[in-house]
Image (cartoon, rainbow, N blue to C red; front, side, top):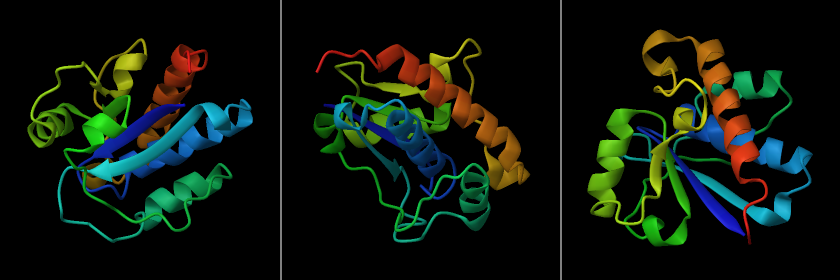
Length: 153
């Protein structure tokens, strides 16, 4: 089983969207037994809070639920627990590297680096544009799944 951790600043918008989109794609592909997926924050600001209402609504528009998810902070031990630690933007990567004490195994990357347009995932916290975030997250997760669905387990 391959373990993936999606990470953003607060774990209430982008990373939980990626977590639940990826879980949905994996389920629809019949690969539930091959992947373990979670999400976390680099900050402590939102710990214990539920997924942001607009992010929940955007997921629900596409038939994806996220009930019960609350924000948690990434821990140094996550580096050993997960095969991939996927940040939403460059700032997340810097913070993830600091939390993990570096990236000696090359496990830390950005979600959009799996696509043909490497960039940061649009941050709806500042723009309110959850449509742009949805498009980035969906594209990134689809490309990630395509790349790793035949991962050796």
